[in-house]
Length: 389
Image 1 (cartoon, rainbow, N blue to C red):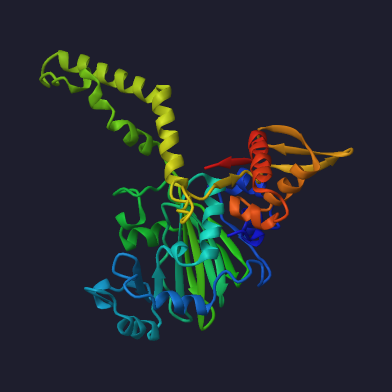
Image 2 (spheres, rainbow, N blue to C red; image 1 turned 90 degrees about the vertical axis):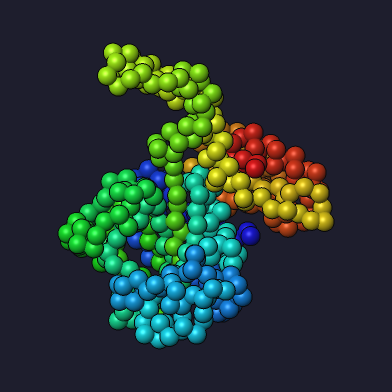
């Protein structure tokens, strides 16, 4: 879905995206105020009602409710065959916050934002919806194990960002929010660092580990949270663990713990595992896994035509097109290239997006032959501007 209003650059506008990535990303919270129409018609009540009324979509695995800071057991609003909408409405009428997961599957605009964020961060991204009500706090102060980009779409909500930052949380026991008691969080969240009112058109970025909480300031409000799930060192170790049995040394018996040979063997194991971790093929294997995780599900079946839709990432952040004499100069993170007028026209269009399908190009340039478009896209791929999936 091509819409320049949903690009990464526009998400952050007027903040420069390069400045954001270098100075703020994974470091500090950023609140960017915008006009109500900044994101177009990203989401409204008609979208909400359409989605919540989908049969057999919602169940205890992708719906959560919280009332005045207390989680409501899912069995109270989810039956065996899915969401009980009547019971859900009873809790909503009491002021409960509703969380719906996986909104990128049901809202085309949310999917477009998700794909753009994946293109820039190179990580997995999921979109969740939060619907809350005035005078009823939702989730208590907490930190997330992922970075989050929050787009406010309906009503008003006030966010409290706290001083404390849990160092490098991950989704493992002992290192995520759920691993600690309410008393722990109350003691460790710190004082309020900033209090941020948000209205439609506003965006808020919160790095993983940063304590935060929000409360509706209007009768009803909705925001979409895009969680960015990056990889960490333990992911790399886990990724090569299945390779270890291939080595005879690592399949050998461990000497008795009271034998002098025990230390020698363990040292040999540590050295061999280190060699495997440093091996170029192990690193390349991890690169492939991360790329597949971030982009593997973005291509789509293209029936009745053969194969899949041609999709590509656009490295718009850090790239710039300028006129140079009678020609054009394209600067990308990998170098500088001179373009002709036709190539520059396509490059200019691409620089407004982060992810696109070939069909988007065909729609944008209906007078150009598909073969010529493909050739120019290949040329721009050589410059480093686009990366075909």
